[in-house]
Length: 384
Ligand code: GLY
Image (cartoon, rainbow, N blue to C red; front, side, top):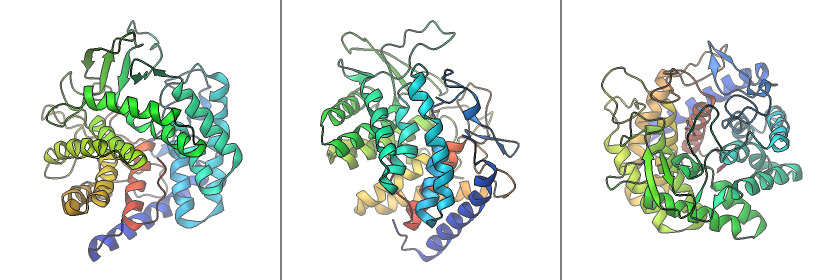
């Protein structure tokens, strides 16, 4: 999307330029890392954690986003150094294929912005093989009762997760769309669409808000119950989940052309827009109490990306979608860490409402912030 409003266009150009300028310094410091966050301004390294720990190592679900940021910057600048650093992640993630046990449905989040991005930009054969391998793993998690299973057994928990699906998976299924587009084999797309239809029927409430976790009977596919998941409570509206739903249905529409997915994205968008606070700062959950003031910049960045896509897809409602997206992105710009000596960008991200990590940095939030800015300047690549 190229902005017609001159002041906004100049701001977006400047923000994207500032982002890339800082990233140029960060990529040197983090060249042999797979960061999931910056702590006290220094990237951590998930590549150090080993491949067998699903919640803390090489198979961590956000491990594709650092590479995604670098591929976006490579597309923006043509600077080969971005490509070299991005490929470090891609090679390291091969250990996850070997370990297998630490993997989950988030293989889309892991390999779309890493290997598939590489393949899209360079036509590299190894990258294509990795993407198709990951897609086959995701397809293998499909339960023919109608949904993709999210997680394996959760260490330390008695929960039976065989029937659990989560809204976030709307962002993993584009890996399946890509695999069908790449191979001509409809199996992957059919699985993705079956899952998306199940989500539309069981996750999206009448008011346009979405549930985080739904448990289905793993034998019949019947709805059993839902859980609040990373949100405030059962029945509440975890903002990042709303954003995954909004932008996720946009992507199902873009890949399939099925207008029911566009309608679903617009329904969730209407709910999201109606709940954006006056200052554009997105809470962790739209139903959370006034205090404590916990925010989630990631939800803002992901939702902004989805709204910018809608502004393109529904030209007669362009302003309806563009204006809240810009509001949230200006807020992110105003509150981001632009110090080139520090590794992270967004400062007000939260892992989940009841967790301990609030108003901190997460690398995947930084990724979506960059993606949104590059959508505005027309310099990005669609990685999903
Ligand atoms: N996909 C998990 C999260 O958004 O935190």
